[in-house]
Length: 363
Image 1: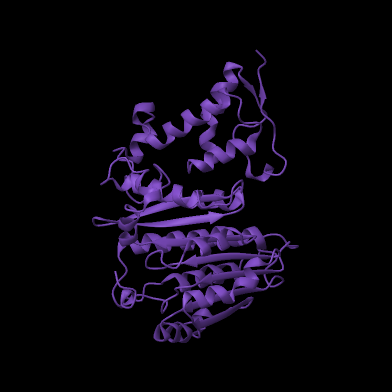
Image 2 (image 1 turned 120 degrees about the horizontal axis):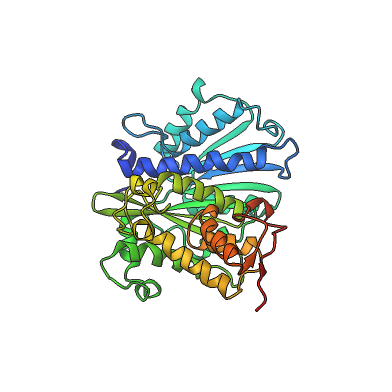
């Protein structure tokens, strides 16, 4: 898929899934900083480093206009009490002059005119745009959401990745092409993790672990993937956030798109289970493998008394890419057994800084 002519034809189903995830997360992310009248951030910044012209050949909205669509909706929402009080700046950039000029022309129409948002469109290569954003990325009183819709991962180098995860109050989503996932197979750090060479499932999880191992030692940081199938090709999104609230909201989006695993727009684990099967509650044999693996891990950790409070239970949920409520059956069962005593049914992201303890039965 060549980046130069990508927008000159209709978006395919996989691209639409990717764009929907970007848009849905933006919708989840903004209220975190704008819902309260007295926001703790002094500015909000949204970056789209590969913005394109704004639409495909049929006029279907691309990422920049989807971002503006969310902002336009919120500009009329009385529940966002900090709107108009906290500056919101949108930074669009693309290395192609024609695409940047087309987008700038499109957003000048009356459909995209609303108050409270400052929009900047520039022709810039990713390295220059990312460098220009460095001061804002390091600001602790600014909320940042970065969309890096690249055609590969050549731009998200280890150095760029380290700068992303080191930026306070910054969430990001970057795209991984099918070609790049193929190349990942031969990377020494990934090849040793792949048990079946032709299995995209193995590549998918191995790539996530590759990025997790790049995190600074001891840093509490949250990463999650979402895979997208287009024909025989597999593409991917990597999400990152330093705050559990960000991960929680991304998982809400991911599980909304994939009710079986919260991981892909296809049966990535080959569970051969339908949504109707889940409603029938046919037992563990008909549950997604991902949930069974998570529950086994959580139970083992609790029986070993490794987890001291609900925030650590939440970390196990996020490590497996499941939602917080998925911990409820294990917690309920172990509480009934008398192994643990807790004051919560499942971990609360709101109690992250003041988590409720887990009390273990004394033998």
